Amino acid sequence: MPAIDGDRLLRDLHDLREIGQYKTGVHRPTFSRQDVEARHWLAYRLAEAGLDAAIDGIGNVYGRDRAPGRKLLTGSHLETQNHAGWLDGALGVIYGLETARVLGHGIDVAAWCDEEGHFGSFLGSRSFCGLLGEAEIDACANRETGVPLRDALDRSGFADRPRRKIETARYRGYLEAHIEQGAELEERHLRLGIVTAIVGSRRFRIAFTGEQNHAGTTRMAARKDAGVALVRLVAAIEDRFPALAGPRTVWTTGDIRLHPGAPSVVPGRAELIFQFRDTDPAVLDALEAALDELVADAARGPCGVAVVQRSSTAPSAMAPGPQRALRDAAQRLAPGQHQAMPSGAGHDAQILAQVLPSAMLFVPSIGGISHHYAENTRDEDIVLGCQVFTEAAASLLSGR
Image (cartoon, rainbow, N blue to C red):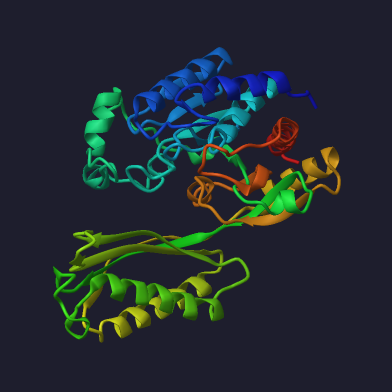
C-alpha cells in the first residue's frame, strides 16, 4: 500500500486554516468571503491532483477522477461554525484529496455546502442526492442575517451553475473522515473510531405568550410571566427525560429569548429552541411524546404555549462493508487502538447513506473540544487516520 505524505497532508490543512483564521481556529461561515475563497482554493488543489474540478450551483466542490471504472466517493465540508475550529469538516475533505493523490485513480472528492446549517439542513449533500427542491432553496435564508440563499449564491458567483446530481452506478460507496468532537477516544487512550451509526435529532421552537407589564408595579399573583413559564418547562424536561433516555441520549436548550428582554419589564413573550439526539428511533419517539405532554401541562398555567416549529433528521446506520474496511485497516496500522462507536453529531454521511453504502472514521479531539477555536487533534493522529482512510479506500475499490 503506498504511504500517504504526512507533511503534505498537514501542510494542506494548515494552508486551508489560514483562510478565515480566527485565533487558533477559523471563522468561515457559509458563503462568506472566506468560505468562497476556500472553495476556489480546494478546486485548484483538486485540479492540481489531476481531478476534474468544479463548483456547482449550490456551492458543492467536486473533484472527479477521469479514469474508467467505478469510484469511491469521499467528502466532508469546508465552512465552519462562527469562530470555531480548523479541523471540523476540513479534515475529511483533505483526507479525500490526499487519498486521491496516493491511489492515483478511483477516488472522487467532494466538499459539501452548508453542513453547518447557516442557511439550511445539509444543503449540499441533499442537493447531490436529489433531496433538495427549488422551492426549499427559495425559502432558505441565513439564520443570523436573513440574507436569502438565492442572493448568497448570486453574490458568490454560483447562482447560474447547474446543481450536480449523483450517478449511483458510478460509486462503490462513500467514506467520510472527521474529528470525533467528543472526548471518548482520548479518555480511553484510543486513536481511531469506526462509526456504527449517526444519531437522529429532533428540534423544536417553543413559544410562550404571557402579558408584558411593569416589573415594579405588577403584583406577583397577577403576573403572566412568559419567562418563568419557559424556565418551568425546561426544569420539567430535566426531571422527565432521564427516565426515558438511552445510554447516549443527549438534549439541549440551546437558545432562549425573552421579549422585550429588559430588566424592568415582565416578559410578555419567550421562546426556546430545544433538541434531543439518539440513534434509536423508539427513544426519539418516546422523548417527543413526553415533550408534547409537558407542553400540554405548561399550557394549563397562566401563559399560552405552543410548539411553533418542528424539524428532524433520522438516525442512520453505517454500512457493514465500509465499516469492515476501516476496521481492518485500523487493526493493521494501530492494533488494539480503535473502537466501534456511534456519532453523536450529524454529518453529511447520514445523507449519503440514503443512496450509497457509507461509513465514517473518527480521530481524537484533544479535550473533546469542537465548535470552538481551541479545537485540535495531534498531528500524529491526523496522519495515522489518513493512512487508515487511504488503505480502507483501496480495499473498497479492489472489492475486498
